[in-house]
Amino acid sequence: MPSDASPAGDAAIPVRHRPEAARFEAEIDGHLCLLTYQIDPARRRVAFDHTGVPALLQGRGIAAELVRQGLAWAEAQGLQVLPRCSYVAVYMRRHPETRPLLEPRG
Image 1 (spheres, rainbow, N blue to C red):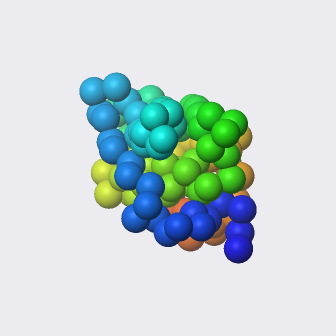
Image 2: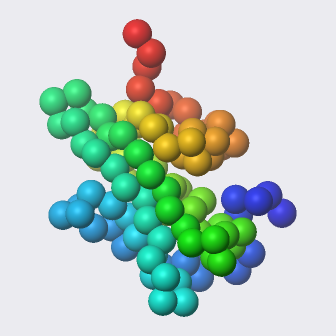
């Protein structure tokens, strides 16, 4: 099983989008896990800048599910993605189907 897959399946990780806080979050076992972002509406892009999962929860696929849902949202909004967070960049390299979302380098 890939290290970024959820052993229990995606349905086991309840992710909530909080646009007013510019983040996706999941509360697991009383701990908050986050994917934060910044939108540049003029350029139609979103920069994912931080993924945070407490050490005791790592390895459960939580970060991957946060990123998967964040990227799905970006695609639905017609936003290009700037992966400022190293985890998001690695996730996108591992999932070539997400590469069309990358902001073109100029």
